[in-house]
Length: 100
Image (cartoon, rainbow, N blue to C red; front, side, top):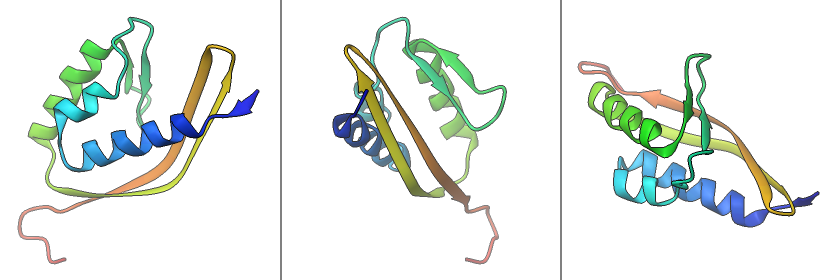
């Protein structure tokens, strides 16, 4: 197994698109392969396939107030044709009437 800096860069791109709420750029970075799995921060956030993930992202952005996104660490590894990436990050939401 070896480090995969290209996967780290991909995840950085996804985070930038997410923070900017740029759905097109974000989904361009997510494979359309039916085996794609996206795991969120909540036990219920488990999406198989880009279509389901895309729909959830759109819904969340409609329901979520503006937010800041801070990435602490991203790791990526690969072995042959298989790779994985994981990230530690946090989000800060700004609610109406909140004092910054």
